[in-house]
Image 1: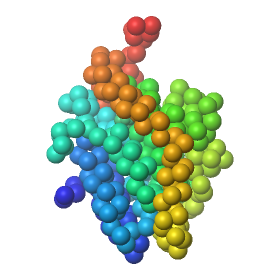
Image 2: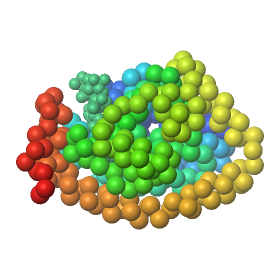
Image 3: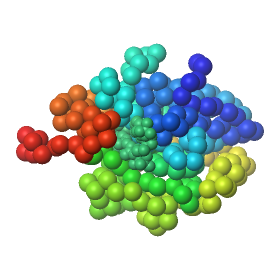
Length: 263
Ligand SMILES: CC(C)(COP(=O)(O)OP(=O)(O)OC[C@H]1O[C@@H](n2cnc3c(N)ncnc32)[C@H](O)[C@@H]1OP(=O)(O)O)[C@@H](O)C(=O)NCCC(=O)NCCSC(=O)CCC(=O)c1ccccc1C(=O)O
């Protein structure tokens, strides 16, 4: 597969996947998601690769979730080879690849982009990184891993706060909440992530594989929840209320959600 929306490189035992749509703050469309799944599967199959780094191009953003402008234009996340928007499949691939995935969060991790780092095994944040969900502002939600697994990490109260208020949190707060493993100066981020990947590569790959699968086993039931959540999201994003959120973002105005109270 030729990549247009991402970059894929291998350095020694580390694969680096870079979301590369800086003009849209690395927001993903269907094609981006398809390419990311392909890249993770390449890293999975490559016997030389022992860890994967996921990061974003540029200094502004790691990833700001689904491409809201695309959704406002066409009502979906655009074309892909499979004809599907496989975000649930990407979530599962990040969990299922039997090698640790390290998120190197270089800027904004918002909405579905925040969910991606939450699903990674480790998160290293630049001191300039910011974290948050934004779905309720733009007519979207992740009622699968994005809420259930998030609550496992930060606790119920904080997970609800993150989703209901849609605030942005700095890297220091994210570290205090256990949402990131550690924070480094922005200029050192990728080197730090590579160092951590190399440290992992010194260990027995089979023990790491069993450990990852063991950590996942406890929350694997959330994959079923995620399937239902994606079906619900697909219905909701085509509803007038869901479309109003995306349209308002594209038109740079506040959404008018009042008339949907209690429907
Ligand atoms: C991230 C912002 C808060 C940054 O604000 P600011 O620093 O002021 O920069 P901007 O001028 O707004 O942005 C610069 C430039 O980038 C464009 N852009 C940024 N984000 C997106 C995006 N997501 N889609 C399309 N384009 C984007 C922006 O329009 C600007 O372009 P100009 O041409 O210069 O105008 C702010 O940008 C922002 O709020 N962005 C939207 C974030 C968002 O709402 N993302 C979707 C969230 S959906 C969600 O939270 C839950 C759903 C979910 O997780 C999920 C689950 C399953 C499937 C899909 C999803 C999903 O993600 O939808």
